[in-house]
View (cartoon, rainbow, N blue to C red):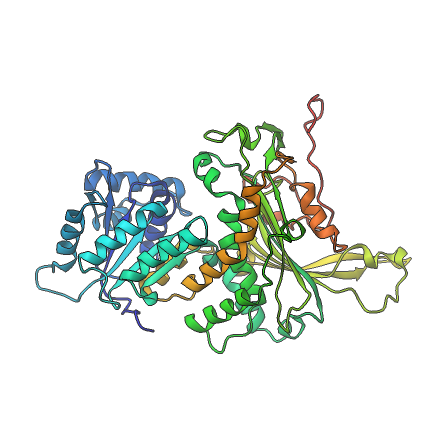
Amino acid sequence: MNGAANPAAPVLFVLFGAAGDLSRRLIVPALFNLHLDGRLPAGFRLLGIDRRELGDGALAEDYRDAVTRHSRRGAPEPGAWEAFAAGISYRRADVNSGETYANLAAMVRARPPGGGPEPVVVFYLAVPPTLIEPIVNGLGEAGLTRDADHARVVAEKPLGRDLDSFRAINSALGRHFIEQQTYRIDHFLGKETVQNILALRFANPIFEPIWDRRYVDHVAITVAESLGVEHRGAYYERAGALRDMVQNHLLQLLCLVAMEPPVAYDAEDIRNKKMDVLRALRPITRAGVHEVAARGQYGPGWLRGVRLPGYRGEPAVDLRSNTETFAALKLQVDNWRWQEVPFYLRTGKRLMDQVSEISIRFRDVPHRAFPDAVGLNAQPARLVIRIQPDEGIDLKFMAKEPGSPLRLRPVDMRFSYREAFAQASPNAYETLLRDVLLGDATLFMRADQVEAAWRLLMPVLEVWEETPAADFPNYAAGSWGPESAQVLMARDGRSWLSPTLSAGSRRQPDQTREMTRDEPDPAPTPPAGDGDTV
């Protein structure tokens, strides 16, 4: 595709926000793992740019500590780290100064002794949204963005906080970079299980024939976090669950589930099919927000035997905050495949477990030959795509228990990445950064996709901001969210079921209990003997 370069070409990776938390926790550990796997091109160099006073050696040492703490492989071997760190350099710079970009242009255009091929330059913007426009303007004015084959820009979310602010950011990017140079990153799309949705659907003839309104009753997508806002209170006050998770992660998952088969595994074809889904989503009216959306904010509660504060008790959070830490939506895809099949989305913080999954619930059998007493109607047949913590796919169906009398119960057919392939899946950032280096935009969001997502959610955002919630906080930390989310599905005669956690999930510190059968969402309980109630 245009913009793809020879993977062996040297790369200059210019990291704006090099001393920030995102660079230290995710970007540099991912780059180092690519180095260990031999997947970085020869001549790879990392140029860090930030406003802190640091030298090359200080930044490299800071990164080594970050890799030790955050990489899936742990502490680096000295020899491997020294080879990687040899390509790290640092420049203290003011992103609002033209001198910064003039100096950067001189570095980019300089050639090593003996010449060599022109490098691909990746400008990674690990910075707040307010800094994107001055940075891309500076790059453009210095002539660093014109070569579409050798210049790429990576923009991190949040891409604005509403439709207008996204358009302003996108306009700044579009003035200096064409779409083929622009990579809007969503780390959820780099997860192995998310990518495997396409393989599951389009490489297996047994699933696609039943992947439509004739056989599917509804789809439920859950992205639950057991953590609170931690040290991100100031950021979260401006964002909230709808902006932070639904606008990007959950809507992208919906697109992968609902899209039509692509003609080929090609970036533009796949992104076109996803855009078709976003166009088909039934618009949300301001008057109808209360019927299709639910919000919540966590209060004090118990999780794993620990008493936790409510959101309003977290650092940097307004004591009367109206920010939602939980959001749920009911969406409809108005096309032939999915007409009248609801898609339910929910996400929240301080929920009972850290788990993300997509549940495709199938319709009931058309004729119930078995009596109710044998248990046929106890659980729905469903296909569960587990994104985290234990990546895999479960098919849940009914089977007869051994012996007599006749009794049916739900059982699982289970695929686990960890067990099937006996190797660790790469971190999502490893996958996405490798694709940036290769010029493959398949897993990245296109501008029209992001704009369509903002346009869909704007009525909800506007109504929620104009009408403060009267019941916040309305769910306890350690529960599965507010009652209003249950009502959202109960209106349709449906209910949320607890996410599927396997024994393999126990390796994750946030997982505390086995849940292998469908059951209604349970309420949290305080430790025995403690007089507090939730």
